[in-house]
Image (cartoon, rainbow, N blue to C red; front, top):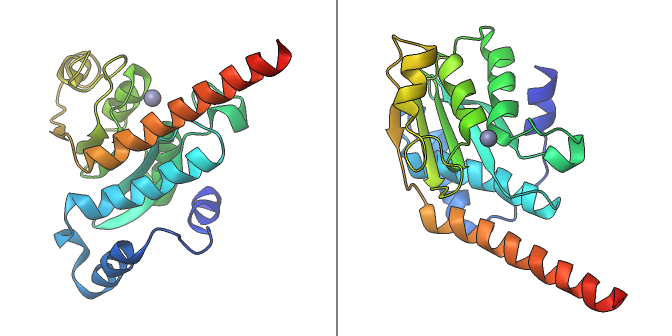
Length: 195
Ligand code: ZN
């Protein structure tokens, strides 16, 4: 729980009016009725934190019984850990929050299509669903490059993972695009300075 407390202890959002409305809706209606967009908004907030920290901007939340039980962003650079993808951190948090490594019925929302490592972790943790924003043409292991059904067949024969793609796709992918454009510019700037 300690990790989760830290993760949810972030300050005021700069995420605008739309999300304030969504947040009010969050309090007013039964949580299970919230649309995918709402939870992807939460994942996008995490992705923006990654962006600001100079990490590849990917954010993730896990929803269990209508409650966000984990929220995380990519922290590979900060933790110097190749496994510190948003999904991996969130899965660990969710297990602590739920008190079980089996996250049956829980749904993972992530701004970018999970890579093979994370797809494996999603299957092994028995999540009920994975919902992503932007597809990943290089490493997408849910539908784009690999098929997560095959990983399910290998690792968890009774798995029946629901998959939804393209939720808030434009926002999720433009964040990634901006990040890599900025990174390239920075790199070429450094080259110019040293040359
Ligand atoms: Zn990954």
